[in-house]
Length: 203
Image (tube, rainbow, N blue to C red):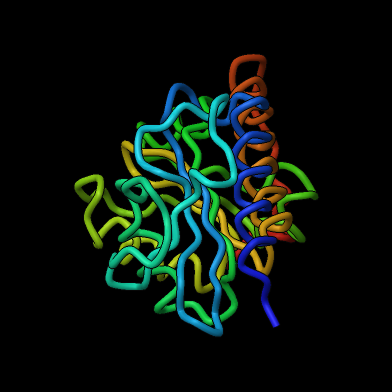
């Protein structure tokens, strides 16, 4: 059975790691894990300094945003997390970052084709862009769901990155590969003409 304390510790550890790796700045981004047995979301708090965040700051809510446990408000993007968990039975963790290279492609509404072999096992192919929705709305998650049904991550128009996984380490690793692919593709565009690995690209 899932251990709530362990999920809190994992959310905290992942959030701090993502912040230290500069996948998000300030208090942007949010991390969650799904306590599927109870249908609870274990999520980072809203507008809270990652460097000061402790286990007791992690918030537990239900899928409707009702507070189960915690002393803070949940992330302002909790509705995005809830919609992903509602619709995707294979997702048990969500990592939402504003990693700069990937977010720059999201701002341009520009897909990232398969230019690295790692994009196949980790991201399930090219990085697609979900339609823009007002931040904090359920539509942010609903717009990403059709892509996340097929992929482990997507770019969100004028927003950032959302990555999923069966576990938090998987979701975090997928988010890292999103930024890695975006950075390398950006540098390749600046230095020449990137060659797509066509045999792996979706028809």
